[in-house]
Image (cartoon, rainbow, N blue to C red):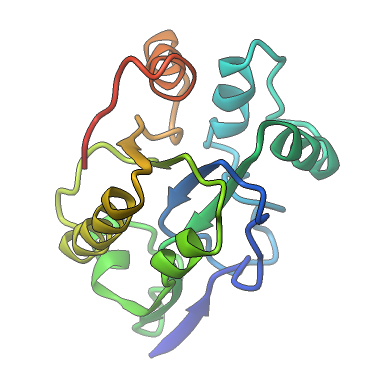
Length: 183
C-alpha cells in the first residue's frame, strides 16, 4: 500500500474568510497544480472571478489568485488529507476509489470553528453517487453550519468543462444567493 498526501496539507485558511469552498482531494504530485482547483480540466478559476464580473484567472499567476481571494474573502479546503492505495493505483482519481481509500480526513468542523466571519460554505459537487464516506463527512459539516447559521450549498462541479449554465448556477448561488442546492 502507498500513502498519498494532500499536496496542500499544510495550507492554512485565512481567518478573515467569509466564503469557504470545499473540494475532496489534491494529490501530492510534482506535475500537479500550484494551488487548489489548478488542474488543466478544472474551471473554478474561470467561474469564480466571472461571478464578480471580473476576467477569469485560470491562467493567472498564483499571486493574482491570492489577491482575488483576499479581496473577496474566499478560501479553500479539501476533505481528505491522505489516501492509502494499493501499489500501482496511485494515479487512480475515480471518486469512488478515492472515497474508499481515505487514510486521513481533514477536520473541516475545526476549520469552520476557526473562521469567525464565515458566512457560506460551498461544496463543489452535486451528487454523492459512489462516495458514501464523503457524504457522511458532509453531513457533519452540514450540522456544524446549521449550528452556526452558516449557509451551506452544493455547486455544480468546476471540473471537466465550462458552460454558460454552470456559470449561471455559480452566480445564482454565490453572488445572488437565490439558489442553493442543499446537501
